[in-house]
Length: 253
Image (cartoon, rainbow, N blue to C red):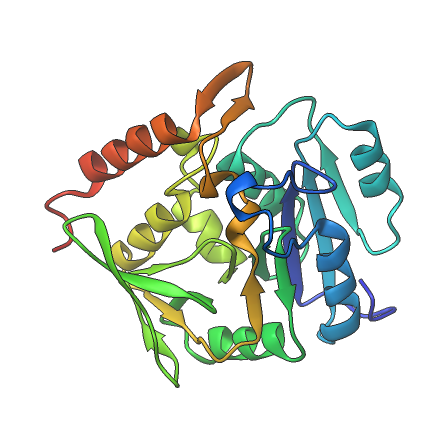
């Protein structure tokens, strides 16, 4: 926490797999954001008392040393292998010591006042289950439109690169569904569960938060190793969307 001697109001949970993200060969010209950049943004721009929890899924000794020795990291978990996003998010929540959880990708930049604004909006309305800077509308278990508005708006799903929720909501809903491991649809599934519980999913696109997604594993076909298994991103997408549809069809329009 960079606000000395203050009780953290937000637990920022960041899973990491690489110290420097591999380059997407089809988007080699696009800028990359790394965990180093993201931590620097937090230190510079986040003034609300917070703690940073890193869940390390990579086997690179340099990455592990970086996580264990970085002065901004309040708490960390070093996994012996990649456990996937849902388990990492669940682990981070179990290590958290504040009432609000902020799930953040390691390739996201945070501007001045961004997390503070989302935090205040979340706590201002007990019916808000989660809030983030980007979200979308879904029909028949399929995405059809991103939210674009100059004010906060209710959506069907909040995107997973950055979102806030109460720790109590996380625990009441039982955490993220690990059947989506290693990655894909777990954040959409959580949004559906939040709405099924009678709570709202809200986005405020005015928050200065940017996702440098072009070099993420979902941006191109690549093999992902996790829990002693390997799956390519195309097969993973097909598997997880089928599971998501089977789970939620006929529940929401």
